[in-house]
Image 1 (cartoon, one colour):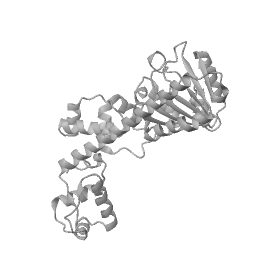
Image 2: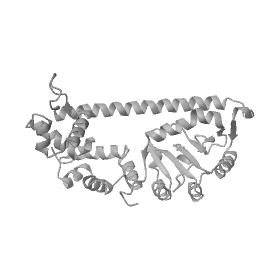
Image 3: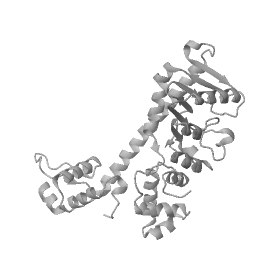
Length: 336
């Protein structure tokens, strides 16, 4: 098997060697396999467990508990792994869609509430000026953390040039005051022109940013005590926003943010250097080469090149090559 192919499927070098040895059938038991691979029993057991988890190793013959697992055929194991990954993606998509529906229902109930009922802990703001002034007041009161969900649409269809924040939200000023800022950006919003550069600078200053597909709503929470739900279209002079107090915040909006945060992909910090093959592939993509040219440079068939590109995009949480470039830049793998 080509060096590194299993790594693209979530398995390391040790698992690759063990799998290839299982395919040859040269070892009758774990002791022989350990001797064949010059591997200690503990890492061998761990590798076999990971292979079984990914579907590359199957249980041995019935009634022989000490027998080695059987190697699954590469094609069958890969197909099963792809189907499992697709099922996981569908499940995550369904969960996010349910979150979006819950947020819409919550917003609908709140909008129908009386804006003059302080016991409800709800304030309704109408018009860009009122919304902006209230947002500035809330952010000025932040002492510990501001949590943000950010998604399109933006004013006039995109964020202001170079902006990485909703209107009225100066993330840099918050960071300068020592306020922690966490934000989850919708994947579509990351690709807007000028946004990548400003995000990179803010991440270097301490912004904790993640990206997710289908962020369910716009949201700004201050110190876990009060939340602003901005309007979808801030340019609408009749647009309204909600300021929500403690009880509803604890029961609905904080869990909503934390759920989206946990499912999102971190930005700014690669978790280690990019492997050399992926680094080369990323450079070729950034240069704008077509698939055929990339395949020639890598010395592989064009189908292999496309599969590696797909794996790279998936690892970056990107759907398009432009989004992959943005993600790679935020992780320090490409120069701005």
